[in-house]
Image 1: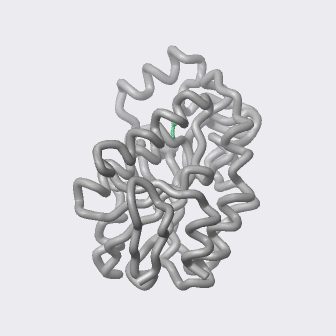
Image 2: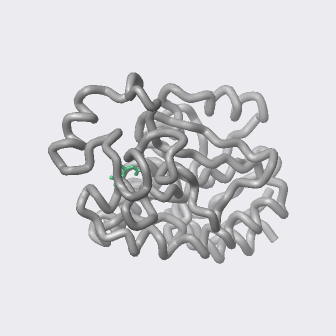
Image 3: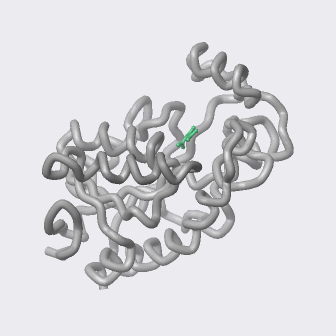
Length: 222
Ligand code: TIU
């Protein structure tokens, strides 16, 4: 077992052979100019800033033999998998899902905006989970994949902390996974959301899981 001694609220122990690193939605739509996140009215510099930290985490996780999963939020070109309520709200915000922007159609599968940022391109053999919702378990194959591999521990990083990372961690927690969130390998557009989201995970004795710094996880993996 590997140990992250300084995890909060207390020690996080995990078996690397039964642990997955899940990288949530590090797509141009959330991390690049002209994507969905920026069109929603956000400053994307916090989501770009964690790219090198996730690179470091990926390097260590790959070397230690963790299962690597990358997720992408997005919809089919005909938007048949986009709930009307989600579509309406995106339009109200001036970032209509399916509308054409500088990175192609916003939040649509196969468009440049939907792609994972080049610095974090998945390696051959790594799993990419396409999800229509904020959580990575909703209408995806993720749970079957994790069960097949006997995964019990999840290290969940990516963007945005208070939206897709949180929803995924909450879904995972209800399914019995032990989740660790590397706080400096996650980002929200607004620092206040980041701080609150991280605090919520580890409050009440770790109500949804644990948090730690990437260096501490990398050291544990080494
Ligand atoms: N808007 C926002 O903060 N996030 C999303 O819409 N999706 C993800 O978090 N990936």
